[in-house]
Length: 527
Image 1 (cartoon, rainbow, N blue to C red):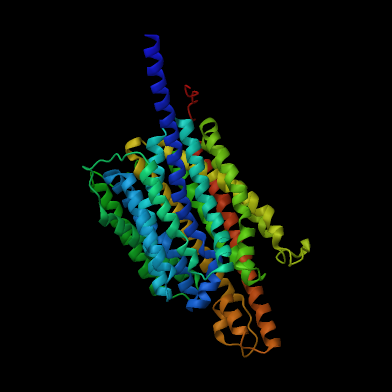
Image 2: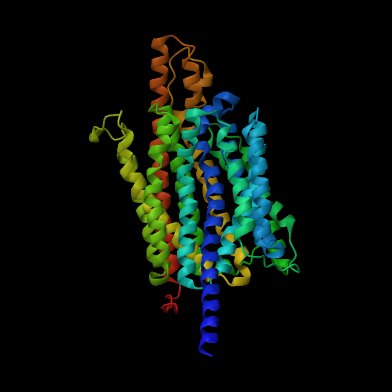
């Protein structure tokens, strides 16, 4: 009897160990997939000046090359999460990976801005299929709350770290290869990930009786496209009022029809009851604002380091990577603390810390604050501010993920994951759209071109640099001084906007969470 009991205990212990190992291997697998998605969000920041010159893209096309990815992804994420509940999240992950690899090849060999924008849109379709599956698989696999929060902490850190390391990878590849390599590098990673997912991810669970509403996804995308177009039109010099009004009407119609359609559906893409939970709502707000700041800061800073300071893409990416140095450890720590402290101190404190870091980076930027007398040849002074901003963002985003997924019922895991990731994409989308457009507009309004300079130099600093190549040395130097001064005017204002938005976000989430019930004390998991 004793031998039989030992044998049974041994088998059960091995099963527990295997199950535990499988859980953590699953986390590694989906984290790699998420890293791939978020890297592609920011990898173009350092490559943008190079591909702009090679493809002849204008200022508007530059923003659409960046925005096509988060825009299409945000429009499809709600539908993708619900479709994953229907057909299985593992299957969605595999299909998304395959699409992502194919789209990467299309974007790598794009010969015109239009083809590149289309390739980025197709990349977003694959990413939208993958992204909800990553968090949903974690939600249904990690049943213990403390383990799940640690796993979500790792997941959230990968999301921000991938976004932060994108400029470094882009700069490194551009040091040795052409700009298309920033997309082509995805293909071998996708092939390895397909093998890993097939071997390591457990079997699928799905609910084939759940309907799927593709029309609702199109309505969301219509609303987003109209809103983004309106933002871009409003923030450019000399906006067309008719275009703004028409875009806002299209946006309002798309969102209104979506809400009405969801209220009539027995199985909606979005259950609005989720948004009434204060923890979930505060998590959505925090995730969106954290990504607003992250995307805007990285885009604007990498442009300044290359176009104003004159750094190579690699050096610019390495400096911006200081953000990831602060983000990764704080995200993991936040995941381990969330079950003890609840979301409020981590979300509110994280957003306020991120705001302080952005402001510090601005104050330490060479040449922007005269009384500091920092020599303009030493941009490394921005690193402390980026580290502080990364620490705050890691705390806020991990706590936001834990608040959303920890308070969503298991049968709404796919929907909750989609809602969270939509908030990420919307934050990134509007960070690039609002701040990128504001930067371009402020440049155009404040630049003072020397007499006789071609008007194309008014469009952007890229165009001013290109125009200066055909001018006499004295006139070229005068033009570049004026153009860089105008760019820095926009740089200062946009970083102040980021600081203000993150500070207001801290106040809003503090207010939301003050109305929430205090979290119940968690018990230690049984060994």
